[in-house]
Amino acid sequence: MDEKVIIKKLCEGSREALGLLWQETSSNVLNLAFRMLKDRDQAEDILMDVFVSVPKAILGFRGNSSISTWLYRLTVNACLMKLRTDKRHRELESENVDVITEEALGKMENSGTASQAADPELLEMGLSKLPADTRSMLWLKDAEGLDLKDLCDIFNMPEGTIKARLSRARHAVQNFLKEESDV
Image (cartoon, rainbow, N blue to C red; front, side, top):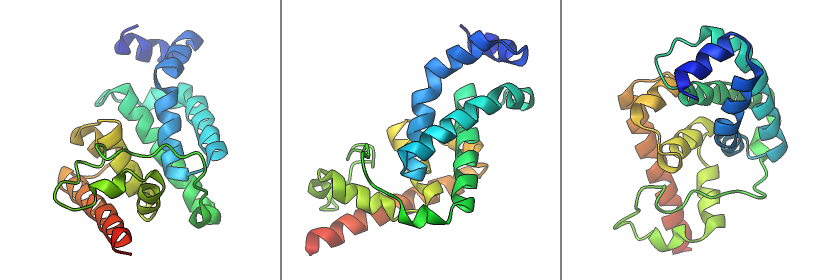
């Protein structure tokens, strides 16, 4: 079904359209929530919360972005609210983590850290040092392949800010990997 048709049917309250949207996007929403929260159960709760809110929230969808970008925005907002209210977010677990690959971090060429990126646990430790919103921004850009315009829509920031944060995030992870390799 075409995206515009799905949006129209969602506005009309179609469960079939919601089911199609679920089939097409739920795994990406879950991955994003898990990346931000580092807890599978909480990520699944966010996934449910996001999709429960879709029938009501779709009425405010302006159509300036794709529906998947809009869902990412709902997910990021739900996760950030969860992190704000949950003081335990500093003690995040790192079990069952799907790690961003070396390629997703943007070719750590000439940094001497490429071999370290092969160690998923070390890479995950470096990523966990990043703030949740920056970590999700890096994930969406490098692993999910979103473009800067979509990231601007999701995080409600100008392109220059997004670029700067991505650059600082990559450098921070690379520096962490380099420091660990020197130990």
